[in-house]
Structure formats: C-alpha cells, structure tokens
Length: 273
Length: 233
Length: 123
Image (cartoon, rainbow over the protein chains, first blue to last red):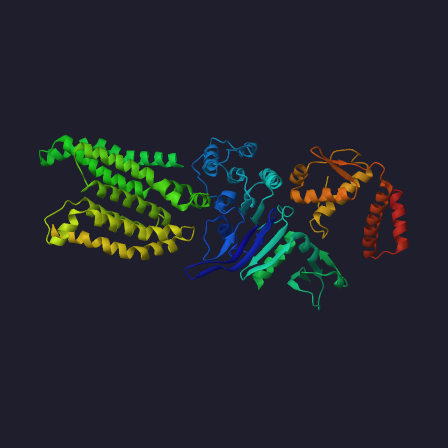
C-alpha cells in the first residue's frame, strides 16, 4: 500500500505539485494522464526516489530497513541508462546492484536485439524493450513507467505487453503508468487519474468511469447534469457528461464512450478552461 | 560497481601519466635552449610530480563523466544504493590510485606535500570536490570555478614548506598540520553534507546556486592562509 | 476470437464472460475443453490478468467452467441446461435488434416482414 501524504514539490519560485494525497492499493494498475507540464512525471520521479519532495511523505509499506528503490522498477521518459554498455553488461550490472540473477533478455532477443551491441546503437523501440525487461527482472512490487510506450512499434509493443502481463501475473505489483495515449493500455488499467493544472481533477476506476460518461448530441441542453465539455462538431452541439446517472435516461441520444474519448474530453476541457 | 570505478580511475590516471613519454622530447628542447644543466632523470621525476597533480585534478573532474555522457544520472539515483555509499564507491578507488602513485613519488625522492597528513588531506579534498562537482553537474561553470579554486587553495596550503614566519603564532600553527587538516575537513563537510542530502534531479540552476551559497564562506576562509603565504614569500 | 467493445459501459470481464458463454452454448467450446491460461488470454487480448481472473471466477460461479488445481480452467457443462442459456442469449440479441430497428422508425409488422424476407434469402 503506497501512500503519498501532503506531498508538495517546488524549486525556486516554481510550484509543481501542491499538497498531493494519493493512495495505491497492492496489485492495482493505475494510469495518470493529463496535459503536458502538470506534474505527472514529477509524481513518478517522487515515487522512484529520484526527486525528493519539498514537504510531505511517501510510505511504501515495505519493511522498515529496506531501501524502497530496491522494490521499485522505474522506466523514465529519458530512458536514462548506461548507454555505452551492451544489454548483457547492463543486465549484469543491474542485477548486481539489486542482488538478483541477470535475466530479462529473452524478450529482447525475440525483438531481434543483438545483445552484444551497445544500447546507444539500438533503435528507440529496442532500447525501451531492453530497459523494461531488465528493470522488470528484479521482481518489483512497484512498477513505474513514464510515457515510453508510444514510441514503440506495434510488434514490439505486443512483446512489451507480454512482459507486463507476465510480471502482473507473477507478482501482482502496483503499477503506475503515465501515458498520453490510452487505446493500448485501456484494458490493462484499473483506475485512471486525470491531472490538470490545478491538481487532480478525476480519480476513478475505469469501469465506473465508462459506466458513467456519456456523449450527448443535442442542440440545447438544459439540465443539471454535470457537463465536462461542450463542443461543436459538424454543426451539432455535443456535451460530454460525467457522471451520468440512470435516472436521467430521458435525454435523447446519450452515447457511451471509450476511454480515449473520455480522456480527450477532459483534456479539451482543461485546455479551454 | 566498484570494479567499474577502479578501472575508470586506473585508466584515467594512467592516460595522464602516460604523458611522461613526452618528457624526453621536452627535455631535449629545453636543454638546447636554456642549458640549465638539469639531468634527464630530474626532468622525468619533476614531470611525474607535475603529472600527478594534473592527474588528481583530472580524476576529480571526470568522476561522473561516464554518467554524464551516458545520460545515466537519473538511473543512478533510482538504484537502491545509498547516497553515502555512492560517495564511497566513487571516491575510494580514485583516492587509492592517487595515494599509491604518491608513494611512488616519495620513493623517487620528491615530496610535494609537507607531511603524509597533508598529502591525504589533499587527496580527499580534491576527490570529494570532484564528487560534489559531479552531483551539481559538470556543465555548471560556476561549480567548476568554485571547486577548482578551492582545490587549488588547498594544494597551495598543503604543499608549502614551512617558511620563515613573520609572526610567532603563525609559525606554531604552521609547524603543526592538524589545524589545517581540521579546517579543510570541516569546510568540506560544510559543503558536502547539504549538497548530497538534497541530491536529486532538480534543475541545474537550483543545485548551482545552492553550491554557490554554501561555498562563499569556505572560499574566503581558505583564501586567507593562501594570501598570507603569498605575502610572506 | 474475442472482441472487447471499448465503448460499452459493460465492464470488460462481463463482456468476456458473455462471449465465452456464447462459444460454449454454440458448441465452439466443447465440454471438457481447456480454456487458455490467465496469462495467455491476458497477453493475447492485452487486458489485465486480474480481469481475466475475474471472468473465469464469474463463469465458475455460473457453473459454466470449473478450475482443476494445477491443470487449468475447463468447460464443464455436462447436464446443464444449455438450451436455456441459448434462449437467454437469443433473447438479448433480439431485444438489441428490435431496439435498433425501431430506432430506424420501423413498426413491429415491418420488422417481422423484413426479417422473414431476409431469412429466406430475398431482398
């Protein structure tokens, strides 16, 4: 059970995160999304121990004497790694630090990676696979992945998913993904957090979110349904409503939406606010 | 990780000492111009001393070169290695190489420092400054200037033989290295501890200004004996 | 083989359970046949293994499958009223169809006539 309590992060005069409170249950898979620059990656970095909060505390629920980073697998969007090493060397190095057996390169080999070439010489997608499989091989309880999944071609992404599913099934870790595109990870995720400039605007389970979000096409719309966004498409007005409760079924043409559509609406609303 | 650091220290220091091969050439040029009567051996030994100092600066400066070139700093911070352990892993191999190389110098008959304590103090001071530079970021011009200056000051203080004193008190202080050792150690700790307790991935400018603020006092304190030494020589 | 409707407000585990049920009822999945492991299915469909686990638990509660320790999940419907399940699924399909057809503005008779014609292969 990971909990962030009263976390604030600032440097100089810049406030990045203010008084954040979040809790993650064991085995939960979360997605954090939102426009660029609101602090999503910062949350991951704080969890990974790569940034230290200005105030507040993070409790991981690991035994007192362990360094939390030994139970965390973190894949930053910078893909920070010893690039002049080969995958074999990097796997050995990483395993040495974590005290585990070097492994995780089978997937990389399936991806056609020459494990004796330097990581800096690999393509971006191959680097993501190599790094992800190496960090997952330490048997983590918390997996943090920052926005790298889009830069990978569909075949490699399939391999990545196999790896993720394997880890999820073996260890049931808590997984926090920061992602801007949802179509790929939509069904992997239990819970979505949408962060706006002001902080967290939405924190909901995916099932409830999809059950409660509706797209309504109507020229006018006077109702006390909570409107997330109002836009005009092809001359018709559209309203995205959340949460939608069954009692208001009387409204004509209320369409359900997939996660991409719902999140896009929230993003649009954030930009237009 | 330790073997990586040892290999880096040896190869970096070795590449500096290898410049010793240039020394005979310099000697030939020098003796043909100046006819000072200095022997080639003395030249080589003097060259070794010079290269040792250069090597000390080079090792300190390149402490985090691998990480900076590879873009591995964020990765390093995410590893379950305590910040204090990283300090040791980085500095101990380099300090060991420098110490052994200094022993060789001693066997050759030259002693750059006024005492083993002063030698060790310089080695520790220079390498820890290299660590601080790496933590703040080698790209930072202000960090490079500040730390370079401090190491130079400490070198001057530690390598100067006792000279004809102007004031009796200074003479007493000068003969005993202990006050200097204490001073250097405490100044180093004053800077190091805050810097690495807050060592994370905040932007360079933030870490730079923090170092600058912490270093003003130590720089001035160290400048004092240096200026005094220059004035009394 | 299995399609998840991303837009549907029906939770993924429920959708998957219904589809597996349909395969069982239609005979595509035979009695005693082994279903894919949680990892295989989650990997193939790119869904959370927990969701697959939930699906299988649901099907087990409904008596359509049973799990054998260490061996996996198997279809076990011997003696079950499969026709009854089929009728239930057919009713769902039909309601959906009728809803969509009336949405086009068709009346009950029109729907029946149109449906009969198409079943006979005409236009």
